[in-house]
Image 1 (cartoon, rainbow, N blue to C red):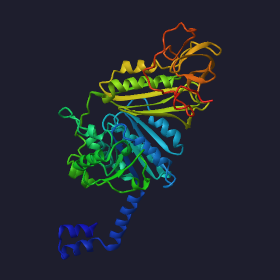
Image 2: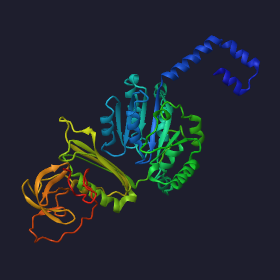
Image 3: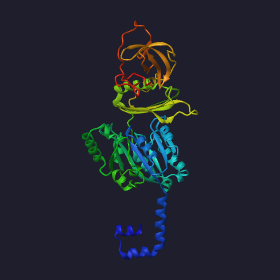
Image 4: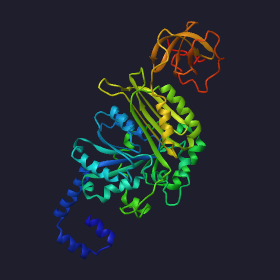
Length: 456
C-alpha cells in the first residue's frame, strides 16, 4: 500500500525514507498480510439481475445443480409479488442450499431487509462458498450493490464479486427503448449498464440480424462487460462465480452518486403485480386455455406470469412461466407433492395496468369443482366431430374425463364444459363445431392426425 501510494504521488526518496523509517518493513508486511487475509475471509457475493422473464431463475437453478464447481451457496431470493413462486422451485431443487426470501422491491422498499438478511446469514455462511442474490426483474442493481459499501459491518464480512445480468434476446430491445415518464428510470437499461457479465439468453428464439441489433444496443450502454450467448441460461458457472469483476471505481465513473444513500429513484407506477394463492387444485388444461386468451388480448403489457400448481389427478407439480406471448409449462418429476404437503396453487402476474380482479376471477374459474358426469355415464366427446362414448375414468393424467368412444378409441375430456364433453344426445344435439383453442390436451403417443386421442 505504502509503496503504491509513494509511486502514485511522486514523493521524493527522502520523503519515502522518512515514511519507511517510521514504519519498518516487518510492520508493513504484517499490516498488508492482515489486509490480504481479511479480504480472503470475506464471503464473495454475486448479484444476479435481468429484466422480467430473462432467465434468472433458470440460470440460478443451473448453477446450483451443476456438479462442476463443488461449491455451496447461500441464496437470497427476491420476488416482486406478495406470493413466492421461484423460491418454492429453488428450495425443492437445492435442498443443501441456505435460502432467504424477500418479497418486494429489493432496491427500495425492502432494501433494509437485505442488510438484515445478510447479517442473519453471516453466522451461517461459514460452511458456504458464496452468496447469490437474485433480484426481481424490476430492480435497479446499483442500490443493491451500494449496500456492500455503505454498511461497515457488511464490508467486513462480504465482498461484491460481480453483477451478472441476464438479457432476453427476443424482448430486450422493446424494453431498452421503452419511453418512460420524466424522472422514472428504465430498469432494463440500469441492469445492462451495471453488469460485469452479460448473458445474452434465448438466442435460439431470434435470428442473427436481431442478435446483432441487440449487441449494438448493449454495447451502446455498456462497452466493457463480457457478453456470453446462451440458450436456456446454460453456461459454465466458472464464468460467473469468483470472477472478481466488480469495480467500485468503474461504478463511480458511471454514476458519481453511486454511494449517495440519500439519492432516490422512481419506478413506473403503472407496473404492478397480482398474486394468487389458495389451497386446492386446478384444471391445468382450462388454465392454459384461459392464459391463451389472456395472451391474445394483453400480451404487450403482460411482462411476466408464473406459477406452481396442484393439478387434480397428478402427483407432480405443474410449473409454468410466461413472458408476453411465450409460454412454457410442464409436470416435472423433480417436483412431487409429498404426503405432508398441503396441495396448493401459487400464481404471480406482473405487467402494466393489470386488472387484478379479472385475473383472480380467471384463475379461480379454473379451480376444480364437482364434475357433471361419473364413470359409466354415456356422453359425446368433441373429437373433430361429436362421437358417442362412455366415461371410464375421472381425473386421468390431469384431465377430468377419460372416455372410451364407440369406435373403440379413447380420448380425454380436457375441460368439464359442453364445449368438450356433453350429455349423449343420440343424434339430436347441436351440430359439431371446432373449439377455439389449440390441442392443449395432446398426449405423448397420440397420432399426429388425432390430437385428442388418449394414450393407451
